[in-house]
Image 1 (cartoon, rainbow, N blue to C red):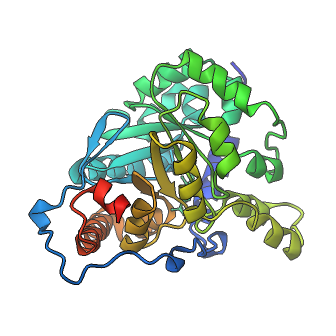
Image 2 (image 1 turned 90 degrees about the vertical axis):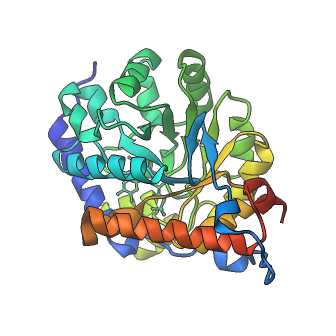
Length: 335
Ligand SMILES: Cc1cc2nc3c(=O)[nH]c(=O)nc-3n(C[C@H](O)[C@H](O)[C@H](O)COP(=O)(O)O)c2cc1C
């Protein structure tokens, strides 16, 4: 087992959390405004007739929403994940935990992932870790943390900018292929703010993955987080260039849906409003994931504030969905 100084990981994770709350790392340009959602002024779908259920990797959600991967492994993660797990259980939505790398290196941090609190929770890991830990060790960790599967994040660009980050890339497809072959829980693949486009999605479609989370451009950019943490500071032209690499979220949704017509597509990256969420579903996603706006609301207003925010978000999304005249997700996509 490699020795990873836990203090280093914890410090970086805390810095990441703090920086992720800084609006400078969000580009706010996902581009959902350019999409017009169908609207039926005569809509006749009552609230009780609307069916928003979805099955994510075989697990039923009452609304197609997931809290995106954010935290785990540090003392300050315990309360956040405890509250997020409870909330997702109450609302019938999913949760993706932050990277389980810290747990793989030190099993004593198990409670920081809210491991015993149930709910439809998924684990998360960076692709670099798949060459450090065996699929068996990762699967054991997923089960020990009470999760139903794993989201592998592709973050070569972020790591290449990060101080002390992993500079190795080039055989990611083979690494993923080998991992999938030896791992028996559902595997999703995601990005971290630059998005998954058509050619990458076509290659991923060759793997037995359950689905893809887009993590496209337009919301929190992890490349931007690292570019802003860079020491010595990067010239602003370089920061600007790096933050504009990749695909906007609506383009990712369409490309990923086309490449994987029958697998689960989760739209993420700059989903800020209930209208963005319904547009994402209408253009091909099966569910949406939101990360930073949830952490921001939680930090500003606590668990009760976040419960209110999410309840209102879902209620408004349901109303907008009904206003299209669609009774369930298949009709919403056909509109
Ligand atoms: C505070 C914070 C921590 C994050 N940590 C992780 C992580 O551990 N693993 C991962 O795959 N993505 C991580 N992300 C990325 C999100 O899961 C998501 O892909 C990205 O933030 C885009 O969504 P957003 O625009 O709704 O924030 C993190 C995001 C935030 C805001």
